[in-house]
Amino acid sequence: MQSVTITSAGGPDVLALSPLALADPGLGEVRIRHTAIGLNFIDTYHRSGLYPLSLPTGLGIEAAGVVEALGPGVDHLTIGERVGYCWGPPGAYATHRLIAAARVLTLPDSVSDDVAAAGLLKGCTAEFLIERCARVEAGQTVLVHAAAGGVGLLLVQWLKHIGAMVIAVAGSPAKVAIAMAAGADHGIVQTADLAQSVRDLTDGRGVDVVLDGIGRDTFEASLDSLRKRGLYVSYGNASGPVGEVDFGILARKGSLFATRPTLFDYYITRDDMETYGGRVLSLMASGVLTLTIGQRYALADIAQAHKDLEGRKTTGSTVILP
Image (tube, rainbow, N blue to C red; front, side, top):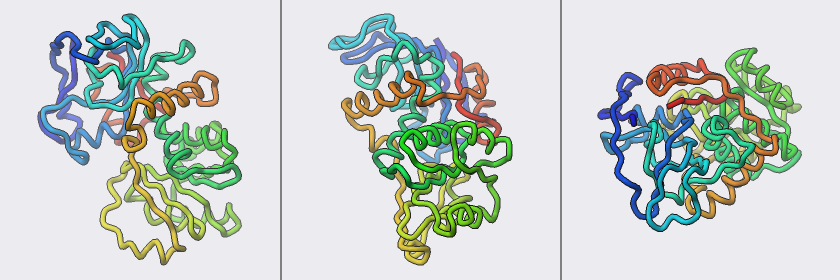
């Protein structure tokens, strides 16, 4: 058994693979043998210290695997059952782990371990952003940044599923083509005149909602792309945090609304996980949400995986193989 731990915050080089010793599962716990692990941008925030954790710590909040042992009081799972999770706590970068049984979901037969590990967190992110945060309705127009990324591609598919019009933004023509193939109505390469391109596509009106996982580099262009009283949803910091904001900018740019949500405030209870996480798995099982796994890395190569993710060298979702 092995796990990746960090003893200090920093760049990818702080990631270290070390031997792991686990006790038997305690009350309400299960031991899982991981078969696939998800890589997500939040992992880099935990590693860098942008989202501080108590050190030393494991990293990774999403994985799939097989239940190997049950602790006392666990009666809704069985040994050998395939399960997945994406709500943490950090520690998924490991061959095995102990975790509260209430934080895992049974996987449908038609959802593979790779797909669950690569897409459960991203799918749940798409669910809460679209359905419960922005509350997007059929007929609305939504701008999606980083639309060829793991979350971006699921946002595009989910938005089209509910009848929205999607304008996809990505960093290159090739990445725009990926988003278009996923169902986007329009595609734009990220440029300095992004807002004007959006206005041209919307007859000058702007979009109803912007879903922005980039942060600092796209903040003002996102606001300039919105219609009056439109909604800016900032859900990530791929280019760094937006930083201090003059609140009056929302008034000057059209009485805009803005929010900075996090998944963990939308997935709090076991009922949240079963209801909304279950819906994500159901849409995966039915083919409404299709995962594109663009790359796979061995657990021993986790530092390179982080470098590639931060360098925007990945497409779709990424799986780490223990």
